[in-house]
Length: 212
Image 1: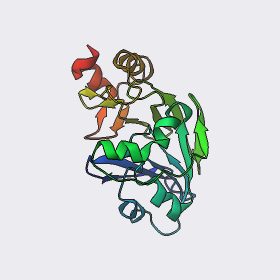
Image 2 (image 1 turned 90 degrees about the vertical axis):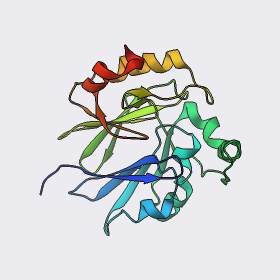
Image 3 (image 1 turned 90 degrees about the horizontal axis):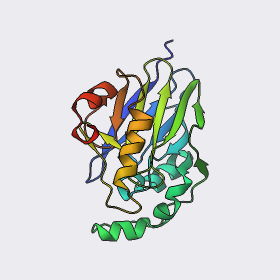
């Protein structure tokens, strides 16, 4: 059996968040990145026998955490977040009201993840890259082994970058994070943003107007 990770993208919510499901093919242990909304839709993409170890969040804006409660209830995955976004996470109902949406309180964070921490699911390894700027606790997740890839949340998009006018945002810090933590990676590394199409590090070096 191939050890190539099984990768599913489920687009959820009114803001079209890219929720990623990664499954170790040998152990069927999985992680879910950014369960932003539509918990039932996310759960429907979990095949029988798959167990979810972690519910990982690139940051704590409502469109990336809005489905966490429902997915947690169904999968019992451990809720993980960088501690610098804890206050934003706890303000989910307020965030929703600002955008005309209604959310209940988010379930408690069970594990605070740190820069350079390695997370394992089955035989797969994910590395945490703290990339503040879009929010204080924004992180990217780098999958190691086989076809490596990065999940960039709202830090880096295809030929764009995340906004910095929301809670705790900092535009200059955002650009520094991208240049120091992402643009130093291999040009061929595939990048899966929190919204929109995938890209590659090299393409963003050449074409992203915010990084010139």
